[in-house]
Image 1 (cartoon, rainbow, N blue to C red):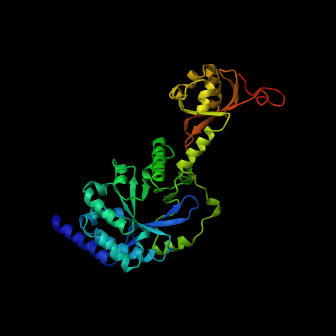
Image 2: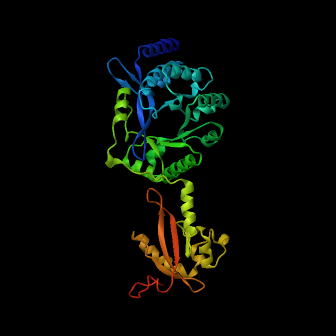
Image 3: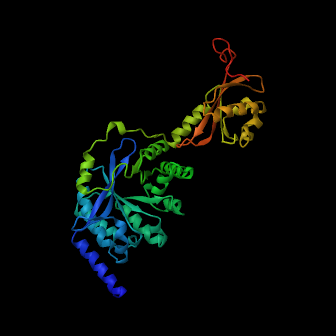
Length: 397
């Protein structure tokens, strides 16, 4: 059989399946990590044969694209999806993927507008997911289309964020409201520090730009707990639910999360965290500095600089034992506690002016307990406060 004939037959078969209603939208929940409430659903295509066999999109989307049938498929799915989503509570959003070939300025915007009007679906509830690939071929046309979608009220999500080379640049050029962290980073976050750094950076970037951040592909409670610690607010994945039919999505919205599974998310903003640290720096009679794992000073309060007799600008990038030479041997002593996994005991440090500080050293760790450095916290003490009631000094050197 000639390739052209084979392609024509494949195209006609796929078109018939669309007309017969064999393609259906399935819905995967996107939840709040704070209380596990379902915030919305991502719509995903499934083919269900007359025999009841369910086929995932990876088995038919490439053929649909080669056959030029993606627009027909999308229209069929939208009609079904909008009907179902219209029965959800008003605050629930529907998220829908758009392929690169559909951002060509021909039918997408008008198709979405017309279908939403027909089924009385508020486009403010529709989230359009795009990938960086969709922008590479013709950025000007894609930008025009995305801006038109945003102008209709849709929110725009950058899918698979962090995997491309220019993703950050697109955020400046396009009306993006949501970042979706690619599942590859979630899968490796428990054992790869670089993945955790990327996730933390994306969460911080989202906060600074007032964007929602959704972690994709969350499959274990350990991943969810780490994301909570990082401060990510939203997630989707098999841990919270596989893609389900429209009827099951309605039942899922009526289900109440088990209270024992609820956790609080670390919701402090970057500004709030900075304010907390600034407040610590300003406490009278206290000094604070941060060291990296090699014991190099990366930040220090003015009070710390004053207590050790250095200019603040000269402290950064100095080893701590360069700044306080008398403490070199003490640092080796503390190393023994670190190797044994024991907390560091507070101890007295005699400073150049003859006064003493009670110093407490704590480990600074990331969400996987990997060492990021040390916090050195000093409190100016009188002789009486440096002693237990028995008069025995606290770890004086």
